[in-house]
Image (cartoon, rainbow, N blue to C red; front, side, top):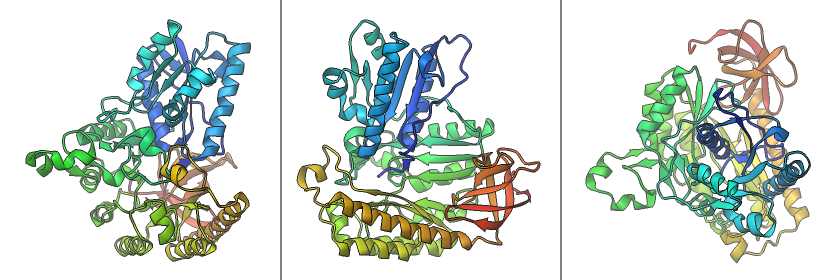
Length: 482
């Protein structure tokens, strides 16, 4: 499952200072996972070459695109509300505006959007963004335009993403697309296709370019980064058919991380998202070897019950997950670990729920992304299982998971009191303009006085206070990483 970026907030309009010759205006919003935000940067780059600058003003846009998420019902509801707003603006203020849907909802609801509801002009799936210029030509000629064909090869490795609304400090670098794991609750394999990996040379070129432009931190990004495997191109499932030379020279995720870490030793490196069944100890060993690879892993588990994990088609048991956690902590004692958790999966009992709480206490996660189960059309769970847990039970169990995570987070953060942590300054604090906000190695938000520091500085901070999710401290100087 993908890590979700704040489904409760409105999608952020992205702004690009493009070429002066560009006269058309693009308004683009992204919802859901980090991959969607990364894909929007690819789309903006493609459209910049077609004469589009991005704008924050919906009313001024010639083209409005929303990059959508299908992973939860709530995300789809939010997108539909936004589409209603776009249509209202189009009717009342800008009748020439074109509206398009990108991403996972585009693939899943293409017919509804175009033919039944007629609320968009074009529908573009995650693997078809290079076709947008052609689709816009179709729209200009008065035809609805759609391309949701899933690719066996597309990775957008040849596109230099436009860093939209960038702080100039952190950036996503996509390394894989698609997923082969077929969890029964998840639509990703159907909306983003099968796993394929990007040429490591193009990844290194993008990372080196970011370093030259002053970026200080990257996140290697994919639905399942641990499945990264480059053997010359093609689907991961076809690796067994590759030539012996291709197999001998193949690059896996641990090797890729090692290459990136060595190429830019002063750049912080993160990665997301991992799957427990695919994470191997060589990845952890590479993390332990390189100071610039952050000591943080997002390691979704979804449930603490073996019975529920089997129904979810998760290819790991609770015992195997615990063993992986133990091995990780043995190699990197100060590791930060976060989770994904689903409550109320079909047939979940109170015993299953208590097993989840017990697993959380065992691992002592730093924070998590927690949701109650929502049935997604087309998934195996929707086709084969009855959504039989009452909503009030789902919500009650979810609240118990959230409450426990809050307690664990508070206890974990108290351990930082009096310690010195290295913080990369990213932006002004939302609550106080006289303070900076950044993250430490374990991905924990840390607040510090501005003093004479600036965005992009690595600062050593003595932690003096904490909440359930934030550290606050006193800066004591720049770190040697600058």
